[in-house]
Length: 378
Image 1 (cartoon, rainbow, N blue to C red):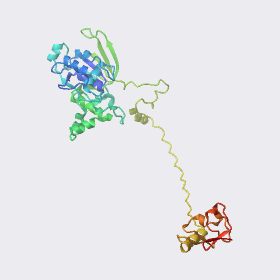
Image 2 (image 1 turned 90 degrees about the horizontal axis):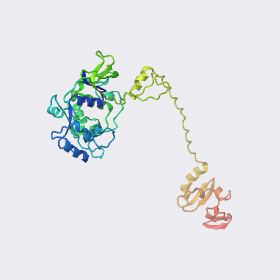
Image 3 (image 1 turned 60 degrees about the vertical axis):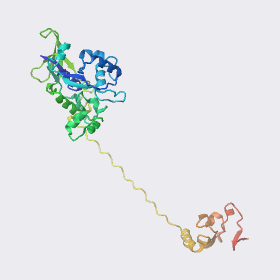
Image 4 (image 1 turned 180 degrees about the vertical axis):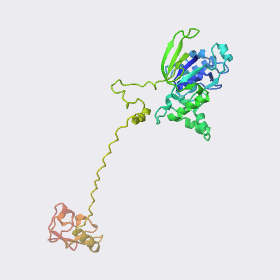
């Protein structure tokens, strides 16, 4: 008979296995706790060796507030990640030390310490559901929030990349991490703390409680495992660390039991391979519509003659210009103004183009002609 059986090999099951293997939390000497009230309680109730007494946990965790309703979780969170909620992250105040069976601390407190016979049952390796999540999944929080006490993520990065310096490893660990790195970190942590030998890749089918089945009259937990010889397993204690990943939420509508219906992103490729879908229809190619070419501008006969003769006869200072075979005197400074050489706009006689005058466009006298620089009646 086992002392305990842990169902679930994720971070919760890994932490339970650490406690059952004799790893005990110690307060790091000289560490700084952000919560002042918690710091005062720790100074009063934690001995000089830093071992946090188990019987003092309820009193130490009293009054803590955070993102959890579990006071014990808030207590270890305040020591593992001090100052994070205040925006002043500090170094971890926790360290794990392994106690051997028959230690003086256990004899003095009356609590059994040292490794206990236990198994961790999970079809996945240490890390649990992190091994089956979608490949593109990343952590919502920085990497240090995934760490276990005594084995930082920066230490793991340096172990897999020896050329990585401490500063570079710490900077990389502060970023959001891909799920594969987190899964391999938990696998390495199980080997680092020597608890991987307690893991079994077995799937639990059912659990039963048998009151008074032990020799001393205590209750015994019976755990049925699929496809394993020697099942069922019997233990005095049962620890559930399955989390919520293995209990998907359903809609309660017809058709959810069909083969192509999946409830996890990581299962989508498996569903497609189980029953291939129809290939997607090709998208029609857009029709090519050539843009109309702009026709080159062809000057008129009047413009060609005016441009050819204006430079020789009128120039920039005035003179005569040829317009439809007739001579027209442009005033000085008129240059190539269009309204100075269009008799149709000035209302002049077609036989002799009237001179340019501002009053011509305002309806002035049209019976005058300029001769020798003077206006004479026509």
